[in-house]
Every structure is written in C-alpha cells, then in structure tokens.
Image (cartoon, rainbow, N blue to C red; front, side, top):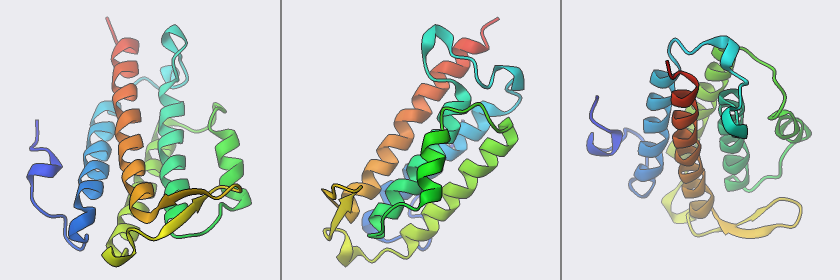
Length: 164
C-alpha cells in the first residue's frame, strides 16, 4: 500500500490550516478508485443486508462535497443541487460515470481549498434555508470527515458484495 497522504507532506497550494482536509480528500479518492477497479457493474446498486449500495455511496460522496463546499463559500444551494440530492437514491449512472463525477467533485473541492484564505476559517456560514450555524472551517472539516465515513462504509459494502 502507498504511503497515506497525511504522511507525504504538504499538498501544494493548500493553506497550512486546510492540509488535513486536503489529505483526507486525496486519501479517500485514492482508496475509492483503487477499491472500485474491476467492481462488477451488475452489483452497483445491490444493498447487502439492506445497507446503502456502492452506487449510492459514490453519488452521495460527490453530492455532499458539492453541497458542503457551496455552503463554505457562503452561498445557498441551486435548484440543480437540490435535484441531485433528491436523485442520490436513484439507480442511474454507470460505475465509470459515478467515479468520474466523484473525482471531478474532489478536484473542484481541492481547487476551492487552495483559494480559501485562512483568515476566513472562523467566519460564520449558514447551512440551508434555516441558516443553521457553522463556520468555513466547520464545513470543510465536516466535508472531509463525512467523505472518509462513507469511504469506510463503501469499503465494507464492496467487500461483502465481492465475497467468494
């Protein structure tokens, strides 16, 4: 196994205080892409023991990154983002399409991290219509934590589905 991202040193162009977020997103992307290599397309929407399917995890990972990073910018979700959220449970997209979308969203998140000024990390950010309280830092770190949580769930689900 490769050295984990957090042990590889700073990620270029990412502010020092956001390095843990970048390391987590890069680690998750690496693990997910490795895990899904050769995964049987016909099992993409299988739910062993009723848990979320691999397809759902891939759609949800991309969607959550998009939504949390949108809030971190201080903007509300678009109607397209709301439609995507509603469609996360739908069985649409091939494995490659879902991976491509997730990878693109991770790249977009890393670009936003590189443009995030450290002096804004404690700035208030409201979540959703109710404007629930958070901060730029809180949203970015939750995005990383949530990504790794679903990466772990995806790993277990795929291993269960691919048992001989």
